[in-house]
Length: 367
Image (cartoon, rainbow, N blue to C red):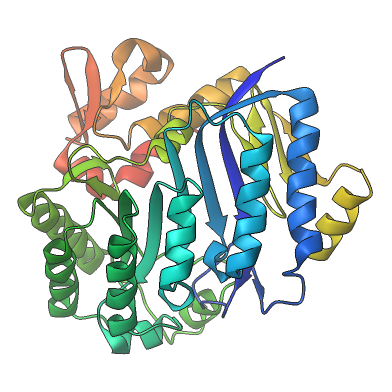
């Protein structure tokens, strides 16, 4: 029986659909009920029949997990604690929207074993928050951060986003400086991408928005320089930590560890098998409670494809990749080294500063 050490739970509910978001989410609470929570716990029970579940990391993503009511979170997290051996657990992350966290909920998360909260701030500028379709204000986000600190959540991450339509460099600089001043344990800083099937993609296609690659690169470089000067270590292209508080769940994912995903739209990868649960909350709930499988998509990967996926993630990490592990891509790496995008030192290949600006292009060579 395989041992699975990393678990992901997809909570698809959101107060509002952000115009840039391409994840499977539902607006409102029509399916946010005990039956859905029972379906998640039933899926865990089924997984425990096939695998030995000894989680080292648990991650609640979405959606907005904290859109669940306090008693619903208590029911779900308590149900997991009753089912899982948590003796090896090192990190339990819950994503949160500032509009959905109050002091009681924050204390509950801490008391039930959550060690890390990832707060979706995105910006400290109210005008840009409105552009992004967020339901919170900058002041509300800061109050929520203070609530999490007061609740003594061991680690707090702040999510930020740059290259927002209409964003001025000065606004991004102010967001970085304010974030550093708050002294979070971790910062995730993402460049806005225009994903298909989103309102932002439609605006881009219609000419209402436009991308500026040079401007985006400048903002990314400023991010690296400002956060590094502020005491944060860039351990992955978009992720920075203080005091070695890296996301252990994300590291495991990037390094190719097996993981199970629970909930509608959640992916799992075990060995060379991958599957995604049906992207329909009501359908997922009915299926799981009926004792049936909820997979809507399954795939068998080749060893070469899986190795390429892992290499594509690892090249984005500061620790790089041993040369011996990417020998099959030696021609591509030699070309990237000539172009100044990667450098090899002590048998390890890493992105250069210029390579970080073109990380996606380098990663594509592996897949």
